[in-house]
Length: 247
Image (tube, rainbow, N blue to C red; front, side, top):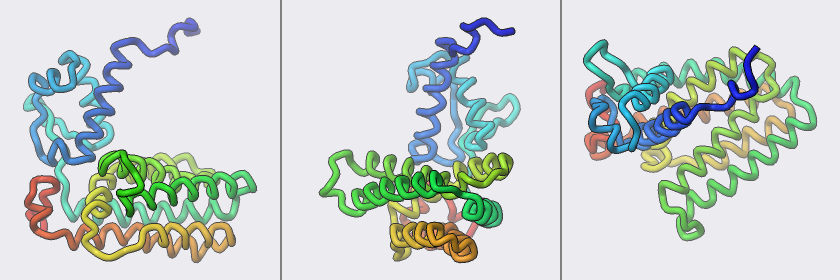
């Protein structure tokens, strides 16, 4: 049996988790560019941790598939490509629409209440994202809040689905799409009303129309792929996401 203290994270584990979260944020936000070499000797000073702690954080990011390790040659930020995002998108559509159908069929009053709350919070974040004058947190803060609430809304949508494996794989796919989604929202390469897309899905779920909800969700997920396809060369060549090589 474990002692009571065994469940308490060590200081080293806490430092590694903190470094992991900071690195992950910098990768998703593009501060560490796709394909960029991650030199431990440089990053340990930037993130103010030891080399061993930083390697632990990088190992967690390898597990997330946001960092790749090339044997003894070190680590790099996982490259981004249009082909990769197509694969992520279509796999996510298949799994998430099935999870939503199950959730609509099995969701109870608590699920409806949680979904209503998540949609309300997401609505507030979307209003701030669309009108910077109403928010003082800056572009990064507004997007971080929107991303958190968008993830929460999508999680609640499928919460009543009983399959733990669907939840596991969808969490991975959602995390993999974050870098692409950030570009589609911040650069808005194609006209779209994300809030209305969310509202339509929400209304279909409350009406218990699983077919309509699944169809709307599939279109919503694919809309981000459409937006990424239309990113201007100026954005692509800015070093944030080098998609030009795969077009």
